[in-house]
Length: 238
Image 1: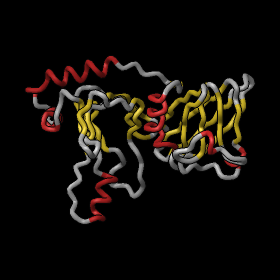
Image 2 (image 1 turned 90 degrees about the horizontal axis):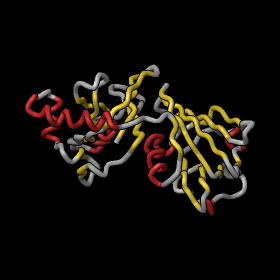
Image 3 (image 1 turned 180 degrees about the vertical axis):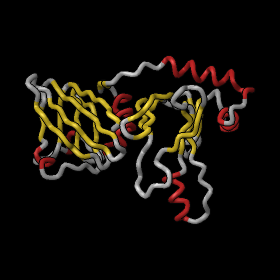
C-alpha cells in the first residue's frame, strides 16, 4: 500500500503504508461517532524516512473533515486485517509497531525491511485505468468522488476530453478520456458537484458515471457519463 502524505499548502511526500488502526473505545454513540471520524491513523514514514509515525486520516482539532492522506495504491494482499479493516503488513504486529514508534532499537532490522519495501516503489505522476485494480486505486484516492466538483472541462484538439476536479480534501485530480469518445456532461454546467461516481470497464470501454454503483445499462437521457477506450488521471495536492 502506497500513499501521498498531505502536509498542507501543496506540500507532500510519498510513503509506503504499513498499518491502519482506529482505536475506538468510546461507550456512548456520540463519542464513538467522533472517534470513528478523528481516531483512525496510518503507519507511515516521516518525511526524512528515518522513523515510522502515526499519521491521522483527517486533520485533528478541526470542525471540518480534512483528509490528510491519499491512498494511491490500495494493495493489502500482504496485510493481516481484522473484521474492522484494522491491521498491518504481515511481518509486523501492533505491539511491534508501538515499539518502532518509540524507536526501540531492538526492532531496527524490521525498520530496515520497511525501508527496503519503500525504496522499491516507483511513483508515476499519471495513472492509466486498465483493469479492476486500477479502478480500485482510483476509488481509494478520490473516495469515489464524494463531494467532488468539476472546475474545468476541455475538449482537446487531439479529440481527448479533459476534466479537472476539486476534491474536499484539498486535492485536485486531472482526468483524460480518449479513443471512441462519447459523453454527456451538460448537467454539470449548472450542477458541478458529485455525490459520488462509478468507474467501470465493459466490452473494452471505460465508463465514468455520476453516482454510486452505476452500470452502463443505467445510463438514461440527460445523465452525466463519459465512455472511452482509455482513461488516465493525475493527482495534485494543493
